[in-house]
Length: 272
Ligand code: LIP
Image 1 (cartoon, rainbow, N blue to C red):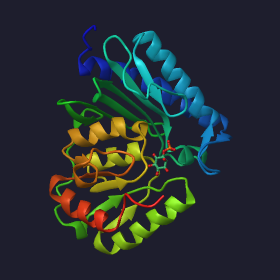
Image 2: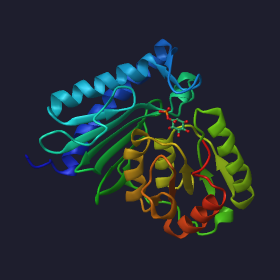
Image 3: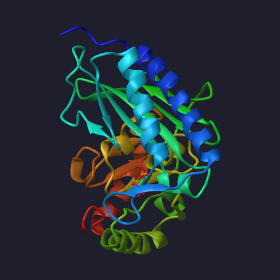
Image 4: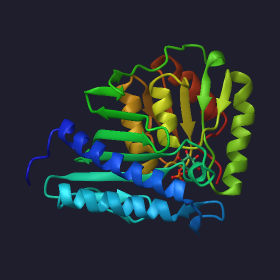
């Protein structure tokens, strides 16, 4: 097995590919976007841009890193781990925040991460409309536009601005809404911005203090999760679990336990 490139080298590839992908998404947005199909439910939409951008990312990675595995939201792929000779797997969400993208809300992103031996070592999240770009490498910190990012230092849950999200299944949304209803008297306020990767990056630089959500897939979490971790946030699940589909909590170390315990009490990982 050949040795994997350094995280910084993988990051440079990710940034090049993500910038081109975001440019395509932006162009297609200006040309007009419509629903191409629906997935898990009638509101879980995919546009022609989601597919075109993911194909573009896959082709670019095939050219730049032949043999690496790619897992993407629209075309799936290597969801069982790397098959490439160097053990590198790329995880891509071509347009995270697709509903925002469809409604022309300037809050959607290309999210691309590189994983080596099952560990995410490099990631980029680029806002399609604003061009804001968050990057991170394992041990190398989190950055936006050349500035090293540090998360919020908030310690009081009652003063905490929390971002969260809702799934596409109405029953799950009803459960998530009950959790928010019970949580909101105990925090500063809630923000529902519509893209997990950007929520994690906002938390990384203190635009919100914390974030949690049930139902995230690997492509929603991979790059943004590394940015959040490298900015000092603790990113985990309930009861010591890894962050994953059951629940993702990202919070400054002092806030993680109080937010975790409140969410556990409210069965935030439960429901459909
Ligand atoms: C979205 C996530 C968001 C979640 C939405 C949706 P998509 O991903 O980023 O956090 O609340 O339900 O899953 O579908 O736009 O790639």
